[in-house]
Image 1: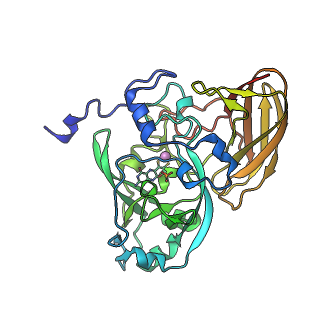
Image 2: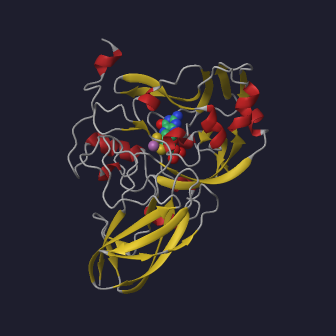
Image 3: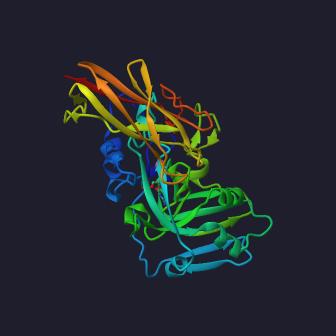
Length: 365
Ligand SMILES: Nc1nc2c(c(=O)[nH]1)N[C@H]1C(S)=C(S)[C@@H](COP(=O)(O)O)O[C@H]1N2
Ligand SMILES: [Mo]
């Protein structure tokens, strides 16, 4: 029996039904937890509250014996220990990371995958060393077109066995401030966040930030890895070759006000002035220009506090005079490029990059 035969329905995702989640989706959600929206109160997400997205099993790598291979079309291929990498100049920058699949459960018909609603986003202070000088020292040959980043985690998707890997061009590496990272919020990376070394690609959706990084390869042909060419593409239908997912789209979230009902998580709020706070961010270092808070069809502008760095989310705040009754609360951000969140999800076959406005149902009394 070939490996392919051991997986049923290899090329297509199973059928989904709106608001009904399969055992497979619930199992993925149990492994890959999201952030609790009340933790949006923190500028830097507490480490244990940062969302997780691990495609396969968490590989356990020993910091003491770890090495990073720089191979392929480099004039000076090399191998670096963790101590050698950590001895290089270090920087700590706050970066908001969001999963490209965040919001997938709001795109209909839903693609069967990790069923994120709003919670696959968080901000950490990442400590590492710039990647660009390391690549320059290894000296890519003139014919190099892309650099691939390969993790230590291996598994199958759509009957394709592969290590999780992604690639960037030399231009992207130079322009995106990519870091080789060993610490998150002043602590060594946790196993589930990529210990002992990962990359962080600020301003891009999370798939680019490869964890458990073990190989960097200089390629003279474009990288053909599954996670680069078979997925993380915006597609209208199965036959659409699609466009690659890259920078994060403008988005905002609010801390749901009041208190929840355990099962439905609908909110109860007491009438009168209510402080509503939240976060807003966009990709590629583009600042947030405006955040609006909406109750039904009425929108008011929020006070925005800029983030603690170009890649960190902004804070926002409004006072809402809550009147008795049932309401749907929304928030909507606009970035400095004039991009604004849509009210309704924009269709994508895999449910990627859904930045539609958040809706919170509240009952005020
Ligand atoms: N090696 C490896 N790197 C990976 C992944 C993975 O499954 N394997 N998942 C990616 C995706 S899709 C996201 S959204 C981020 C999540 O990072 P976090 O789990 O630290 O929040 O890691 C990225 N890097
Ligand atoms: Mo992701």
